[in-house]
Amino acid sequence: MNKKNILIVMIILCFLIGCKGETNKMQEFNKSEETIFTQARKEMLETQIKRRGIKNQRVLEAMFKVKRHKFVSQSTQKLAYKDYPLPIGEEQTISQPYIVALMTELLQLKGNEKVLEIGTGSGYQAAILAELAKEVYTIEILEPLAINAEKILRELDYSNVTVKCGDGYLGWEEYAPFDGIIVTCAPPYIPQPLIDQLAEGGKMVIPVGVHYQELKLLEKIKGKIKTTDIIPVRFVPMTREERN
Ligand code: SAH
Image (cartoon, rainbow, N blue to C red; front, top):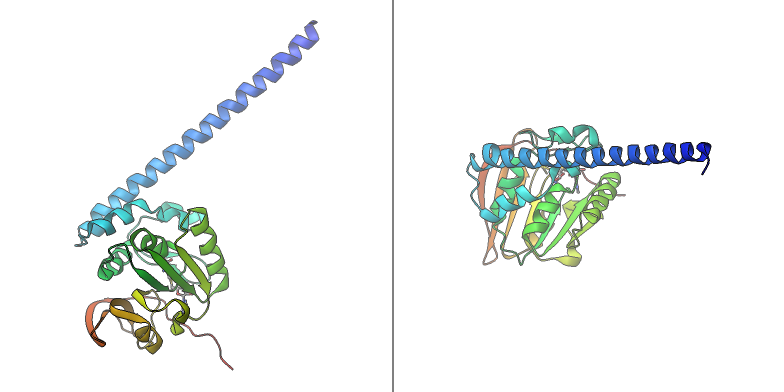
């Protein structure tokens, strides 16, 4: 090899070593970022969820496992584990972590249930439900959100979640009855189709009201509905598809 060739080989080697260094740095950065998110999730669990009285072990595990930051935009990721709702586009919000945990706990899922969610939004609540029930059906009225949520849920391998774009007021007759129904937008009154599609012994968690909203738990016992008021809440309103 002449001097010139040796020089070229050395330049190429330096370049390759430099690139590897950058890749390692990137991997280190991603790893430390994941560690920071895991730590934030642990804190969220302790300070926002357990401290406010959520005790169901399976719900606590799911809230720790599901990476909430994957369901928000890059620019909001740092806020994903804070104690408040977050914007998810289309003027909609992902609920505060405590409210997600509370609503999920109220369903008392054992693992074998078929659950319907109205208001897919980011897909985060659907992922939590997918950890705790057998099948999850979720309806979102805004197409861009439905498409985005479906994409994220696929990427994260939630094969037991089915997303559709439509008006959740009407429920999802094809897969009814449901052992659990969770509504994450507030209608002015409880939609009759959802009551009809609740299985015997099933539970529905739903915020109801216009200016003042109350989170309600409905249980279907021997065909009759028992309603319990839980706490005052603030959700985006349930909108309706325009009908001719
Ligand atoms: N559960 C979501 C947050 C939902 S925000 C999450 O985990 O991110 C409430 C969502 O309900 C919004 O995305 C809104 O578009 C949707 N929505 C409102 N009215 C609806 C209706 N009639 N049917 C289905 N979705 C509806």
